[in-house]
Length: 492
Image (cartoon, rainbow, N blue to C red; front, side):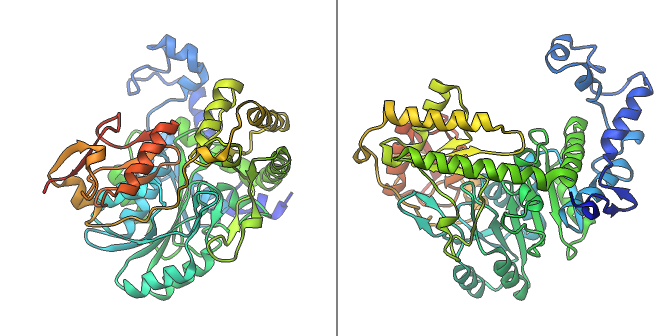
């Protein structure tokens, strides 16, 4: 155990401390009579919910007040918790976020670019990035990621492609990077950060799936270690906090006060102390035991990959894909498995695991599944997953020729997301939209990467892809029509 790291000080506080959690414990002992919100009054007003969640949970679901600080303008225990988080993650400042990493990602974009200003980004970003562009009116400059046709997945951004985008758009305000992608692929982050800074641009990093990079010895470089200006870290994914809790990290070049103003434009004024305390406790856990914990996660993932590849037909991929460019590194905790050689789409294997074997993996797309391994997984559960995949191949496997070949489809951008989203529109049957400009989002969720975004042209290839994804059972979201039979496009 790294004693120096464990005893590191942040404003006089040790990483063994959990200021928000400690303040909640003190507050509970005070037996304060509540004449404030929430209206359930420590659970007394909603006995059914109290029975479901437990009395401790309901007693700690309290309102912002002096003993507990205020997330919109922290000056005491929340400020202390943010200082500890910044120190643990190697950032100049950290913001606790209760609107999910969506809120953190959107705060990054809104902090970096305004209406009509450019931001360079890969097209395989999460929907939250595109939503931020709708909100602020910034213009995307896409760097089309490389793709692996066999696996059917987008890869990272090539450094030369980023360089070209920067040279062609010297007025861009920022470069946005995924670290890693949903599948575990990492770009050459250090080089991209260096490029951005050499041209006076910020580097923003979506680390929704990279919390563990800060606490592992055999993992890709983290955004803060690479010198990035901002990073959105999804603590609830691999860090152990409650769903919807996240952390936004910034480097020393940005004003914390200004970033706080941006955050407060959209973040709730009624922050959940259940979420805040879970961030506080999870940060402490990672700071004290993260390296040891994620070393075990890596071991489990490597074991699972080896066993799955022994089954035959499946391909659980890893660092053998690394090529020093579009796949600069690989997150070995990600158990990404290609399924097409057994004649099943990833979404079909996803459904079989859930319906036949009571196993819930993170997602399935047209060619892959992702089993998300983290601090709460057990060896016996990994073994159950492996044996279930073996049975699925035996019971349901079929010829690969039944599956459609597909590849990354580069977007045709006609106008900005904001312009298209708010423009006059009409709803047309999906099959009649080829050549028209989409005015809404369409994506498979998870992973939440848009197939179409506002301002992009609909093509026959995209329509074919969407219909095939629907046929295979992918969960598709975004359009106003929940059945995805009609699509909103710009009026002519």
